[in-house]
Each structure stands twice: as structure tokens, then as C-alpha cells.
Amino acid sequence: VKKCSLSGSWVNDLGSNMTIGAVNGDGNFEGSYHTAVSASPNEIKVSPLQGSMQRGTNQKGQPTFGFTVNWSFSDSITVFTGQCFVDNDGKEVLKTMWLLRSRVESINNDWKATRAGRNTFIRT
Ligand SMILES: CN1C(=O)N(C)[C@H]2CS[C@@H](CCCCC(=O)O)[C@H]21
Image 1: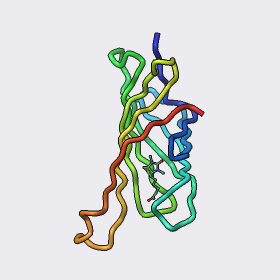
Image 2: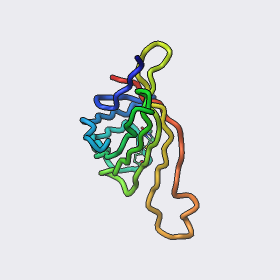
Image 3: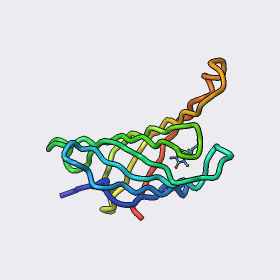
């Protein structure tokens, strides 16, 4: 039967690597995110992530989830949400959408402070 587990190591098409630890009884998890690219001029560092996945029998082994990456090298934060699928070749894949919120100097710049996108992760 199809079953997709979030724990372990993942890579996306931007070359970012993510490692997710064990999912606890509440469906919560922690991990780390290492990005290859950034909008920040600062030196890129590994950043912590924390999140939750839906549990319960109705997930049919392909659970939905959300997590937040608190960037350790820039004044920004990204929230991801998505679902863990087993694709048609039997491979696990995370289909996600994300919002990247950067700190801006003034409320007048709030309009340009949030970037959005889609992203797919496969297992490394
Ligand atoms: C590399 N990325 C990646 O793997 N994404 C899915 C997107 C959404 S988070 C962003 C990186 C943000 C780094 C911190 C900053 O530039 O403020 C970009």
C-alpha cells in the first residue's frame, strides 16, 4: 500500500537539502534546511525547521504537512505547506507551496516583502 514518510533527507530543484527527524506522537517534527541559493547577501548557514503533519487513518499514507524555516543568516522566514505523495513510479515526493517573508525597513515597503512559490522535493 502507498506510504510516504516525511522523516529523512530531501533535495529540491534549487539544490536545497532538508533533513527531517522523527515525527512525534502529536505529528510534530524538527529538522534542518540547507539552501544553495538565497536573496540575502549574507553567508548561507544551515537553518532550523519545525513543523507538523496530519496523522490519522484518513491520510491514506500520503499526509499533508506544514513547516517553518527560521533562516539563521537573514531577516526572513519561510513557511511551507504541502503533501507527501508516492508518485506513479513508486518514488516519494513532497509537493509544496511556500511564502518567504523578508523584513523590510518601513510599512511602505510591506507590499514587496512576501515572495511565493511552488517547490518539489525528492529523497536524496
Ligand atoms: C532556496 N529556496 C528554496 O529551497 N525554496 C523552496 C525557496 C523558498 S525559501 C528560499 C530561500 C530563502 C533563503 C533566505 C533568504 O533568502 O531570505 C528558496
